[in-house]
Length: 325
Image (tube, rainbow, N blue to C red; front, top):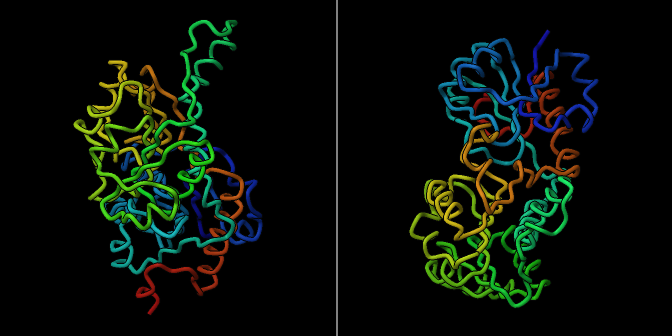
C-alpha cells in the first residue's frame, strides 16, 4: 500500500481539519507532529514514503534531502510557494510538486496577530498574565504606553502591511512605511507616509515587518538599524526570523533599549536552550501568524485532493507541469 507522510502538524490539527478517510482507504497515512531534528532524521523517517505532504516552509526540503528519499513519487506543499523546497530537484526526478490555492485561506490572519503582538508589547500583557498566575497583581508589570498619536513604521507595505496600516490607523496612530520598491502612491493609498529606511528606524515608536524572505530581505534589519531605534521602541516580526539580525536584537533586548514581539525565528521550532526563551523585554508567539481554523479548513482538504488525484494518475495544482509529459 502507498505510504503518505503528513509533515509538520505542530498543533495536532490535521486529523480534525479534513476528512482523511478517502485517502486512508487507499494509502497508509502517517501524521508527524514533531519537527525532524535534522536532515538525517528526516531522511531516515521518510525513506519509505511515496507521497510527502508538507506544511509551508516548516521542514526544509533541499535537493540533498529529496535525493535521499528513494521512493518519493509526489510532493505536496501548502500555499503557492515554498522557498525551502528545491522544486528543480523534484523536476529532475520527475516528481510532481502540488500546491494549494485559495480555499478559505485567512489572508489577514498574520496581520491580525501582528496587531495583537503590538498591543501586548505596548501594555505588558505577557508579564501581567505571568504575575497573576504567580499570585501577584500589578507589581512588576511594566508601565505601558498608549498607542494613539504614536508612530508605527511598516517595513513592507504589501497585502499584509496594508492590513496592518489600516489597523493602526484605527488606533489613531501615525503610519509610515518603507521598502525597496515602495512608491509614494502606494503608501498614500493606505494612509501611510513613505520615508527612508533610516528615518523609519529612528522615528518609529513601533516597527512591524511585513516582507517575504528572499536574498534581498535576509538581514534587512541589521545592527545599525536596531541601533537607530528609539529607546523603548517595539520591534514586531511576523514575517521570517532571518530578516532581522538576531544577535543585534538580543543585545538590544538585554540592554533594555527595545522591546521585541516575535512570532518567527531563525530556527523553528525554537530550540529549548535558545537565548530568546529567557530574554527580557519580549513577547514570544510560536509562529501562529497563519495558523487559524480558516487556514486549516482550506489547506488540508486540498492536500487530500492532491494526493488522491496523483493516485488516480491525474495530478492537479502542479507547480512543475513539465514532469507530466
